[in-house]
Image (cartoon, rainbow, N blue to C red; front, top):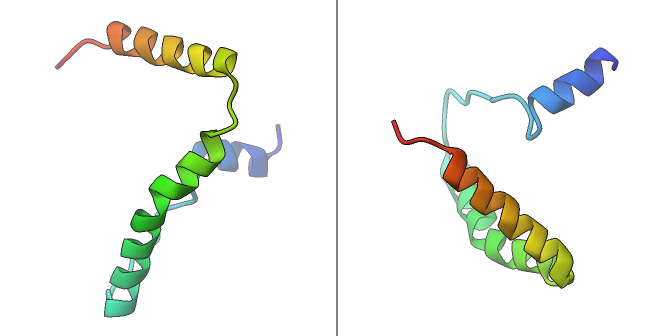
Length: 70
Protein backbone atom coordinates (compact mmCIF):
# COMPACT_ATOMS: atom_id res chain seq x y z
CA UNK A 1 0.00 0.00 0.00
CA UNK A 2 1.15 3.49 -0.67
CA UNK A 3 1.11 6.18 1.99
CA UNK A 4 -1.99 7.87 0.56
CA UNK A 5 -3.97 4.61 0.80
CA UNK A 6 -2.81 4.12 4.38
CA UNK A 7 -3.81 7.68 5.25
CA UNK A 8 -7.29 7.17 3.79
CA UNK A 9 -7.70 4.01 5.87
CA UNK A 10 -6.36 5.73 8.95
CA UNK A 11 -8.64 8.77 8.56
CA UNK A 12 -11.70 7.59 6.58
CA UNK A 13 -13.55 10.89 7.04
CA UNK A 14 -10.46 13.06 6.92
CA UNK A 15 -8.21 14.57 9.52
CA UNK A 16 -9.64 16.77 12.23
CA UNK A 17 -9.75 20.43 11.27
CA UNK A 18 -9.53 22.83 14.18
CA UNK A 19 -11.53 26.01 13.73
CA UNK A 20 -10.35 28.91 15.87
CA UNK A 21 -13.60 30.74 15.21
CA UNK A 22 -16.94 29.00 14.80
CA UNK A 23 -19.47 31.10 12.97
CA UNK A 24 -23.24 30.84 12.73
CA UNK A 25 -22.73 29.58 9.16
CA UNK A 26 -20.63 26.67 10.44
CA UNK A 27 -23.30 25.73 12.95
CA UNK A 28 -26.06 25.91 10.34
CA UNK A 29 -24.00 23.75 7.95
CA UNK A 30 -23.44 21.13 10.67
CA UNK A 31 -27.13 21.12 11.57
CA UNK A 32 -28.03 20.65 7.89
CA UNK A 33 -25.67 17.69 7.60
CA UNK A 34 -27.19 16.06 10.69
CA UNK A 35 -30.75 16.72 9.50
CA UNK A 36 -30.04 15.19 6.09
CA UNK A 37 -28.29 12.10 7.46
CA UNK A 38 -31.36 9.89 8.12
CA UNK A 39 -32.66 10.39 4.57
CA UNK A 40 -29.25 9.78 3.04
CA UNK A 41 -28.83 6.61 5.09
CA UNK A 42 -32.27 5.34 4.12
CA UNK A 43 -31.52 5.97 0.45
CA UNK A 44 -28.25 4.05 0.72
CA UNK A 45 -29.72 1.00 2.42
CA UNK A 46 -33.24 0.75 0.98
CA UNK A 47 -32.13 -1.58 -1.81
CA UNK A 48 -30.06 -3.93 0.32
CA UNK A 49 -31.39 -7.42 -0.22
CA UNK A 50 -32.48 -9.67 2.63
CA UNK A 51 -29.26 -11.71 2.64
CA UNK A 52 -27.11 -8.62 3.02
CA UNK A 53 -29.44 -7.29 5.71
CA UNK A 54 -29.20 -10.61 7.58
CA UNK A 55 -25.40 -10.52 7.30
CA UNK A 56 -25.24 -6.98 8.66
CA UNK A 57 -27.57 -7.84 11.55
CA UNK A 58 -25.57 -10.97 12.37
CA UNK A 59 -22.29 -9.07 12.40
CA UNK A 60 -23.76 -6.32 14.56
CA UNK A 61 -25.09 -8.90 17.03
CA UNK A 62 -21.74 -10.71 17.09
CA UNK A 63 -19.95 -7.44 17.75
CA UNK A 64 -22.33 -6.45 20.55
CA UNK A 65 -21.95 -9.81 22.28
CA UNK A 66 -18.14 -9.79 21.94
CA UNK A 67 -17.71 -6.35 23.49
CA UNK A 68 -17.24 -6.29 27.20
CA UNK A 69 -18.45 -3.29 29.18
CA UNK A 70 -15.89 -1.16 30.96
